[in-house]
Length: 281
Length: 306
Image 1 (spheres, each protein chain N blue to C red):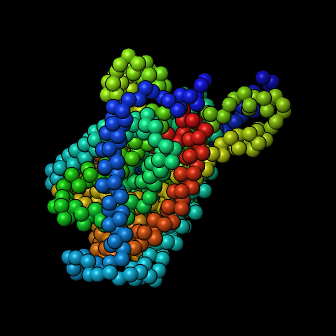
Image 2: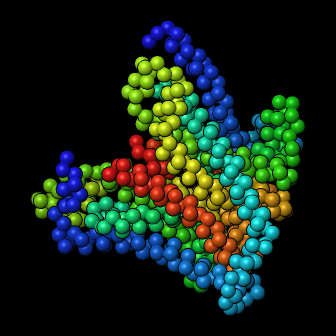
């Protein structure tokens, strides 16, 4: 490389770093401020406008958990997310595998792909009113089961699609050998396919957890009080009379934290899910 | 390697295997039909009914296209249509531009860049409801850091962000850009790493300038990724709800109510089930056209990987 080139690339680096640092500041500051506010004493909210509070307190967290059924809501969110991940992974992985190994005509496969994409993007608001009525009639309104059922409709197509694109990259030779050796369908699936698909399952699980944990629209439609999940609770802190800042910030910190940890430590898996296999590594 | 032959006869399928394949597909099919398709048809039925849940416990009869006609003269619905369009047109180009710029800036192998890339993704993994609340705090005119620190620092006096119809819209545009630029960033970043280095080096040897390389080589190679990102973001921005709800509550007035929000209010606050269903189907038609474009794009990239 010539001397001139080297200088130029150094210059680019010198310009690059401050810009990236500035962008990082704008990306990270709101998170920082959220956490700081959640431990800021209530009296300081509108009076002390410094970025850092004069003193710290855990009152808002205590308030959320003692007085306001915070533990129940947290439990709801955990139960919903856990159940949804478990069921969608089992059901979705099976279907994804069957789709790849089935010898359906191309037109059928295309139709299935269209349906999967349609469910990914269509205005979900359309099924909210019908489900509200159906859950009401089934006496499931305001139960975690209602939330779980609705979330499953959302997550299963995602998992099917993810696992479908994943299984397409898994070579068939191993299964063929096993098949010649007399291993049946289930045997091949459990002892050959599943171990190979663990990265795909990890992606799908984390992504499903992300979807279910953050989901607001469907959950809010079928819950009133005792089955509320965290996003619904947070939205509820904003009323026409005003905003309950402290508890809202404490709850927001709680809902944000797990996903940030996922993103920092298991980013590869989470991102693969978000791209829906649109971008291959 | 004899790929065609394999495609035709992949395994020694027995009739037994075929049964298993169907069995494996069935639960997913059941869930999708039961949870998605059923209610969709139910909402077609509802859209032709006169039914306000607050006044009657059952549908009050078939009313033809009345609900659809009413929607076209409903000021909030028309307003929401405009705001939905506004939001898409203002946010998607910015997300695209900023995300792409960042992707080029932050591409590289150094520790610092790798860490930055991991951190830059954070806004899009967080619940949109929480994004709304945390920016509600940022925009607060008496205590929020935007007016009191950032704009103050630049010697500007900030507007009453969430109290003014115009600035409330801008606030939503800002948080949408903040939350979803990372999505563009991550897609374009990984697309950049797939551009073959040999081509770039060959062009460099041939004396192409950096700008020429970008326009003549990188941009065309990145075109499919751009198309995909544009479609993803366009559709998703039409569906925005949570962040608006927790940032502005649709206000002031109904200036920041978008279509999803308008239908949500109609159905779950006013309980006018017929009108909400009719409006949601009008919305659906627009979305379906866009979804079809995505489908075509996906099929194209699917065929390439086969």
